[in-house]
Length: 181
Image (cartoon, rainbow, N blue to C red; front, side, top):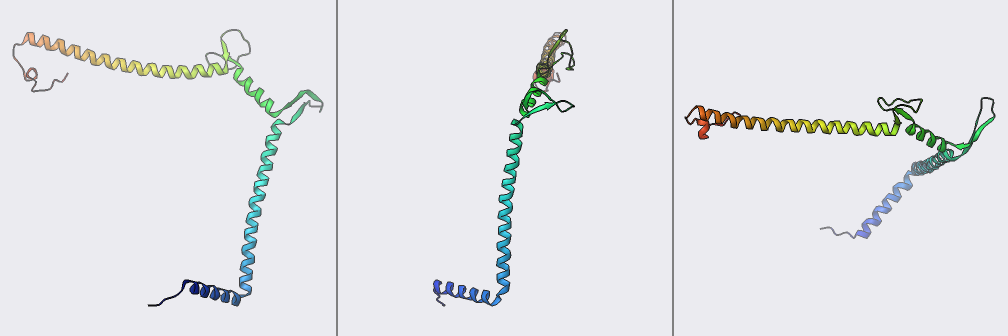
């Protein structure tokens, strides 16, 4: 049985690897240089991309809050200063608070007649659809129960009439055959 010390074995391996690397010379130096350059390129790319993305996000976020002045077609300022965020907010609020026809949801010009806000129209439509579906399901269930109840009631009346008409006990009367109704 061979008995080797682990330290001696590790030392021999390290010496062998060092000898091989020294013999290969230029090839090893080129490989190391390429690997270092590749890693530096990767680190630079990741850091640069992160900084570029942060700058873009910051620019976009700040642009929503940057004030500007609307101008006329002649280049003169029109109205008060505003921001994109304020204009978006106003546009969205106007959309939902615009008066629409209660029947078809189309915008109406006048406030006479039957008109509600678009938000009210949408909520009413959604609730009405849900209510209609619930009512339809309830009506189907009630009709099914009514049908089953009528079938049972008719069966009881028919059994009574048949028992009065015929004094013979049939297989169904004896419970040996299942009733079809």
